[in-house]
Amino acid sequence: MGDRKQAGDEEFQSFLIGRWPRLMRTAFLLTGEQHAAEDLVQTTLEQVFVAWRRVSSRDDPDTYVRRVMINAHARKHRRRLKEFLAPRSDSDLVPELPDSGDRIAQADDRSALLTALSQLPPRQREAVVLRYWEDLSESRTAEAMGCSVGAVKSNAAKGIAKLRAIPGLAETVTQGGRR
Image 1: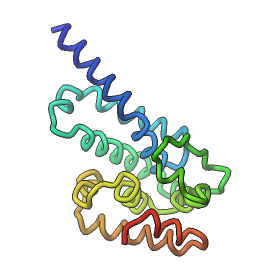
Image 2: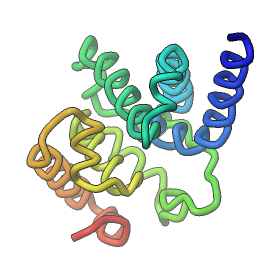
Image 3: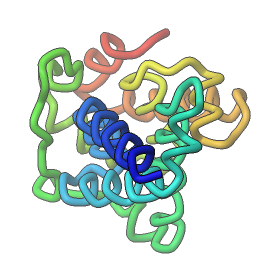
């Protein structure tokens, strides 16, 4: 029994090491702050570790982990919705460390994009992050957000429209997004 637990712990550790950069990027895009992203990832991984035996037996544990992260993020911000929706200043955003291949790091005006993204309502931000930066299909995004495909389409379209309405971001959003 101890060998099975140790194997499960090693499997979880391997999963964690392999997914950490992507989880941090997603969490940062959802929260807009480095320390909040770290907290969100840690909360997510605590929940996943408890259920790791069940999670690891799934075909795609990433989907489960993503859903846990979205739910944890939504729960946290339901409690303080007014504070979360308040516009943030540029100084409130702490940039993440870019990894190679990170499309956001390649944006000409990353600070403006992150500031604009942080001002989207939570569901629109989730839809935009999962659809365009995580490159999930509409159905996988709907599954992660716990809503219908129509809600994903609506939230993503509204979020992209708001980003496009910001002067100087229209070109960045068009290049990074889908039409």
